[in-house]
Image (tube, rainbow, N blue to C red):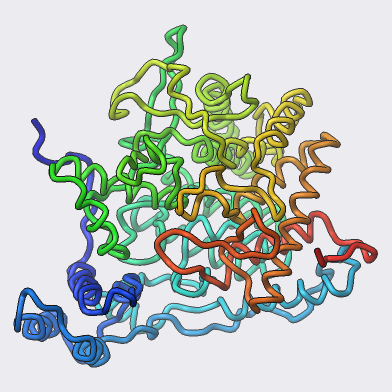
Amino acid sequence: MAISDTGPVVQTTPFVTFLQRVQLEAHRSYPNEITPDPKFYIDLSLKLPHHLSTVEAAFNDLTSGSRDLPVPVKKLEKFVHEYFDDAKDLVPHEPEDFVTDPFEFLLNVENDQVRQWAREVHGLWKTLCYRVSDSVRESPDRHTLLPLPEPVIIPGSRFKEVYYWDSYWVIKGLMTSKMFTTAKGIVTNLMSLVETYGYALNGARAYYTNRSQPPLLSSMVYEIYNATQDEELVRKAIPVLLKECEFWNSGKHKVVIRDASGNDHMLSRYYAMWNMPRPESYVFDQESASAFSNTVEKQRFLRDIATAAETGCDFSTRWMRDPPNFATMATTSVVPVDLNVFLLKMELDIAFMMDICGDKNGSERFVKASEAREKAFETVFWNEKAGQWLDYWLSSDGDEPETWKAENQNTNVFASNFAPIWISSFNSGTFYLCNNVDENLVKKVVKALKNSGLIAPAGILTSLKNSGQQWDYPNGWAPQQEIIVTGLARSGVKEAKEIAEEIARRWIRSSYSVYNTSGSIHEKLNVAEFGEYGGGGEYKPQTGFGWSNGVILAFLEEFGWHSDISIES
């Protein structure tokens, strides 16, 4: 019998390991009614001239008085203030391509009230733009922030670093804002991470090296090329994308499902290279894992938590065998629809980019890869009765091919069940919703969406189950709104376009209402109610907010706003 989880683990740094101890002590020190944000402690930087060894010794002295009693709050705060900085690794940066009123900015937004608000949202890029400080480059072992070559756009609030999949919707907004240099810088940063680690990290922190996030780098390059025709960027991106493509289609990420005819279909899953509490949420994960006494079960559970973070949708009943029981988290056993949508898009993008650069053989190879994944969508995910694509539960550990079973499809309703409609937005390949739109299929999916219960007063619900997790009811998130809305809008089917515009207007109106009442753009909305921001999960509601800003601007670019249409509810 195995005495430990044998999956891959990417070790973290000594500094991160030490900051986990500080985080745990803070959690012990503060009274129950005050819960310090664990991420605050793991993001600290070591002050000069202190060295880690001397600070560890000082911490040992601080905590050695009594192992049973926590350090008094004032003493802990004094220690943190003496040895650490909490805001010195990022420096505000004025983006060189920002102008207050960009050329031809949202020409189809005729309503003056909406145009003024759009300019304010556009102006938020200045508040979210930073560069990595020189101290991070000169003394990387004093920071958990990773050095990056170009300025960054952060999400905002507690998220003071670049995040991988967030960046796609940030770039969508930057295209509307005509900030092409800033957008290319974001892609350059992400490519540098792929070149260093072999994959784009969840975020640009030392504690995120054990996992990635939804693979959207090719889509970012595509968006920029579509707006700028920058062939040099495409040429630089291709070898990086090939490396990322290999990461997602090999090792533990690769799964093979065999159909009834004996044909094998290669798909991908999320699989974090970590089986311990996540450093940024160590105290929470340690508490959650305390339900398990068996070491192997505990490690597998912690890997499934880290893997849920790799999905970008942490947390959701989508990853639970027995929802809403958090202890049944089993993310590595899910073959997710949307991950494979992103990888299908990557294959189509690489084929498109290789064709641009004259590599016809390479382009054909990736067209064939996309066709194979398309076939897997039909066989593994599509459910004719539901009119949706459903996640698939693995019966084993996924290391060997397993035979498809209808009962392994997850029949619960999630926004991600409709993610494949997004591919219809792009004419860079042969997917069956691409150049030759299957009207009957689109109409079937539209009918399923309308009957799903997901369409709410302020947008699309993430799920129908109210679990208290942030990627469940009643929350809606900007990425899922954009994926579904953009796919429907560009499908060419009249009914699909109409419902897309209606969803987009609900999202914009509610975002505007929340902005007016709170003064901020929020990370997520409570879409079950008009004009309410979202909650739930392991941290307080966040504002800023990168991808939300991007989707608002992208929707206004796509649909405009007539002068006679009110943005008020």
